[in-house]
Image (cartoon, rainbow, N blue to C red):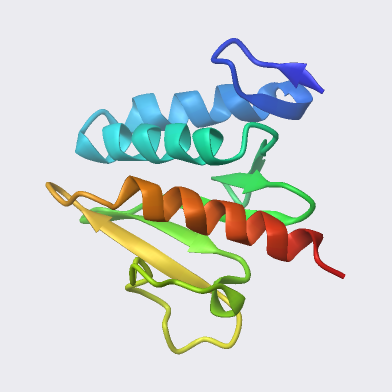
Length: 132
């Protein structure tokens, strides 16, 4: 795996990392800042996470998709591929709660997130991907 210029890992060179950098820059407002902050927390939780670019959105994977990061007009959304199977004692999941598989976290302008709880959720998602 190569390291990109921003210190993140990806398995195809710096293509996905560059596209994520570009997406953050193109947002140019609080959404870009929030997405960049979530990206940093994801990497802090799992230094071996791989950045990908799928469906025109950032995707973070480790032995399978951990989560995606999408930007909408009024919020950013972290969607966990297997969120319904994860424990969420801090109740970070606040969107897509009725689905059988996915769960999401919507973050609106000015909102904060429990960083330790998010990192724990990332690590649990990775462990879920690695379980038989």
